[in-house]
Length: 193
Figure 1 (cartoon, helix red, strand yellow):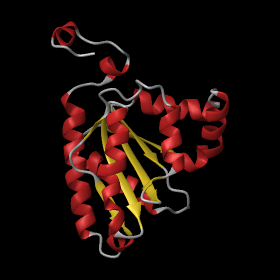
Figure 2 (cartoon, helix red, strand yellow; figure 1 turned 30 degrees about the vertical axis):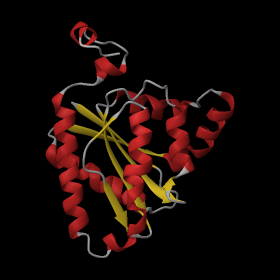
Figure 3 (spheres, one colour; figure 1 turned 135 degrees about the vertical axis):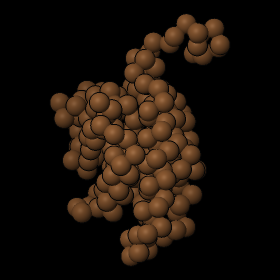
């Protein structure tokens, strides 16, 4: 069974960030048979993430979330936009992961914000973050402004397209071998790290 971790950094309940994460997860579920979706609400782990950054030791709840993300076949990551970038909680969670935890892992990125002006956060903040972590974001990312929720037809179409791309990428090849640090001999010969 394919496992997808969904990391959502919305701060309110209900949260438009969580709504977008659920919409993307549903799109992936429609495109990928026999998939298990595991949602991680960073709001519930905010204190644990901060304590881990200060001490270097994760709480049991944070360790479970980290293990879920690390073991997943793919990752859906959705953040609200604050001051033209991802939220501090979102970034802090990815800061506490092992530097190689996301190597080669397919990622579907999404963000929410008040206006369409912030949509560039996908390409100028989220893609560089996941590139640094050596993850593999799919081509289509989804941004949802407040206006998108009033008539969600276009948002649904974008989510569906992103879900199909992500499902296709996840089903291409398992990431477990790369995530564990194992590199096949053929890749070593071809210059892979």
